[in-house]
Length: 604
Image (tube, rainbow, N blue to C red; front, side):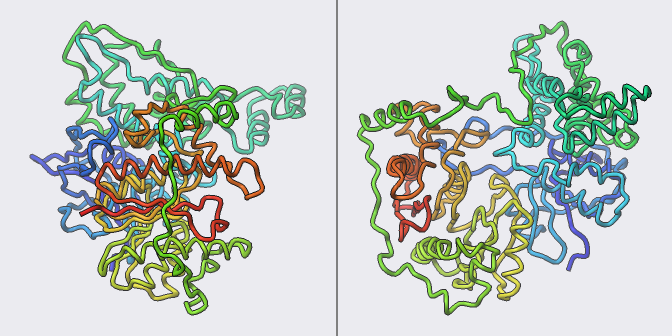
């Protein structure tokens, strides 16, 4: 048994140096900032980046295979112990995820993803050393970058976009035909600082600032009497406002190298003065300054572009905050998607295209009700802290989805319960299928903890826990299942199943949350794209799908039709990849407003 949690990072020893990808570089710098992190660090010698085997139709441009870029690090300056392993020496649960990964001591439980693993590292360090200076990096109530990149513009910026910008600048991708194009993410970050910081307990913070800085008693009393909306805005100093957080350390790692490479060619103080002010503020931090030696080898090797007299190109960037805006997100007229004229237009386009999605017969007929009274109490959704008012309907949903899985599964299969929550689906599958291995994939710690309590009570030995976003899971499996995976999550689950050529049973939810991201494009199928159905029309279809209430509501029938259109698009993509599919209405249909089951099996 391990006595300490282990953080696994990708890297390679070569000619006395440590070579690492950008994500590991960010992680190492954050660890170096903490000086004495409460985790063991293992460098996994894995030069080949994971490349999925999905078909070309599944891939977006951002998923195309790119030559992995490695950065040199002086291992001798690292302030904490590191060890080395081959990938084959790592536990299976670690190999099932894209590194970085933290493996918990004495548990089949790992946390994957750059932001998530670093947050856990900070939490563990603060728990071990309660007065540690890195506690502030976790932010207000420990929530720094807790939201996943698929739904949070800010997390996506810190975890993916700036890291990719570092790779492009370092690899001279910013230069084309003698022109140096300033990365958009630098300008987006500059715009970010032009907006007021988001303040938690804003009135209290501003009043304390007034007490600390305003010397004139009368003026101080006047300001303290004002409402929050009447007080002047405070300066946006750090990435997330008034205090330094993990986001600052992660972003600094990338910006330090980017700025070092650009500064001899571009007047950055003129172009992005607020970014440079933030950068100098971070450089003045004691622990950042002590950690800079870790980046020095990378800066020294490629500290400038070889070409001279480059023409500087400054792209246009929309002036928006990174907290709540996505420059690539479609913005509908009137700020709404469900005006009836727009809905009628989309339904007319689909009607003319002769696409008429319909339901298949339920594959299990009358045999879908599970004998709940015969099962141990810990199997009941009630043990997952479900409110009594929802218990009967949740059992009905589980009747449908578990019975569908049971009709497809083979002995010894690996089954992944994606978006597992409290484990309602995965736990009963683990109980009914002891010869199968069940992986619970969920990004919320408290949900997985509830699931583990139930698994422990049932003494099940065939369950593993992966706390990560869907795009960080890369394990091999035979069947994927999800119950009410919200918005894009259903498509991410199906994408994972396509990559592994695995069977799937999916119950979608929150159709209005469907939108393109760095992994997915919409419409999903070539059939819908060839209609053609524009993105804004597709998003209208998704939002209208959420207008399913009860049978007496006049919007419900229309919403159900739009649900069928969206799910038909998903299944047409699966069919183009060789799947035999079914669109099934769960029984009874009142068990949920989102009562579709999408079932797919590869044809022989």
